[in-house]
Image (cartoon, rainbow, N blue to C red; front, side, top):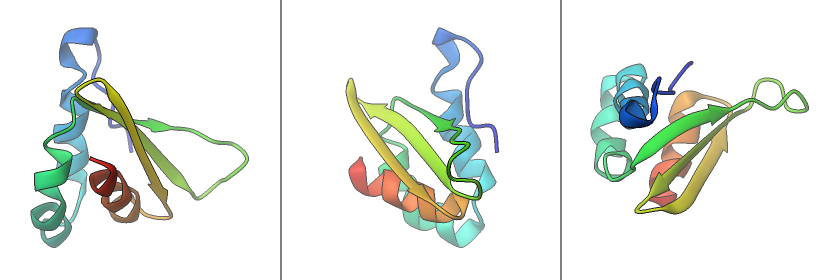
Length: 81
């Protein structure tokens, strides 16, 4: 999943892409928290294949969360937000 916007003016596109990648039920549950984020991007980790870590920021403060599925990682990220 690529949840990264292309340029500095488009970093918020990653939030929309992440929400679009989630199942409808997950999207409805997680949208309030995720929508508060300024941006979100996946962080690859060769040491943990099969694990997705998402990084983001809320008003300039770092936030992150990870999991085995996009919904699990997004849930943890929404909890940080």
